[in-house]
Length: 109
Image (cartoon, rainbow, N blue to C red; front, side, top):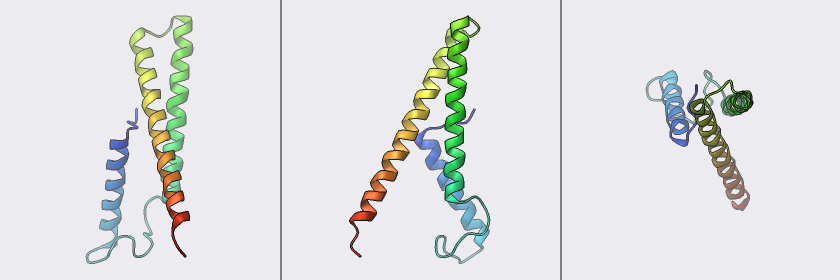
């Protein structure tokens, strides 16, 4: 199961930056020119979105299993807490994207 918390997202982003810097070689600045290897930002967001959807579907499946008595209390609590963390992460990312958009709109031309 993939951990979806703001801390793990930050660590993944830092790791991606390190990999980008390593692929550029010595003396090159990250962000100056386009990195040729590795996933793009949109691909990273797509992957994170797909992971969030899969976590939500797994939680729904566990809740349905609890209705039929196939899932125990521990499974239900784990699924609910996982879904809660995923939702909080998605809302946090959404809020940051909206804030970044508003900051860009406010920039003078």
